Every structure is written in C-alpha cells, then in structure tokens.
Image (spheres, rainbow, N blue to C red):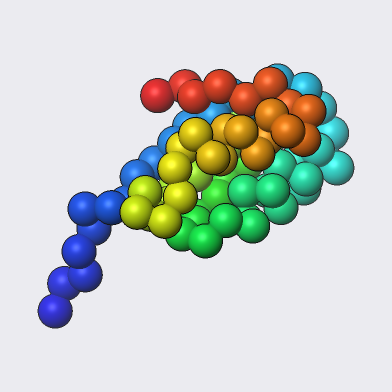
Length: 78
C-alpha cells in the first residue's frame, strides 16, 4: 500500500544572520519543534534551510515566523 503524499511540501528558506555553528543548531532546533516536519537540511555556507514537511500539520508561514521571532531574517527562496 502506498502512503498518500499530497500534503508533503518542501520549503527552501534563505536565512540571513546565520553565521556560526551555534546558529545552525538553533535554526534546526526551532524547525524541529513543529509537528509534521519530515526532514531538515541546514546549509551554513549557503545560509539556507531546506525543510520537507506535511502542510496539513504546519504551514510555511509558521516556519518562517518562528525563525523571525528568534531574530533571523528568513525568507522563502521558492
């Protein structure tokens, strides 16, 4: 039986202000707190995060808002 994937989404986020390993960890931890997160890849060198998530459980707006509340300028790249 194949699982339905209609709610799966990917968000690429440009994150300004992420300059060190601590920031990398904080960003990953913030995003990991949400129910529905499937995968997180944070690229310190590129200054971005790629998040795969269930859009039925969390919205891209909530993900971006949580990073902004932590002091990062987070904008979608896609």
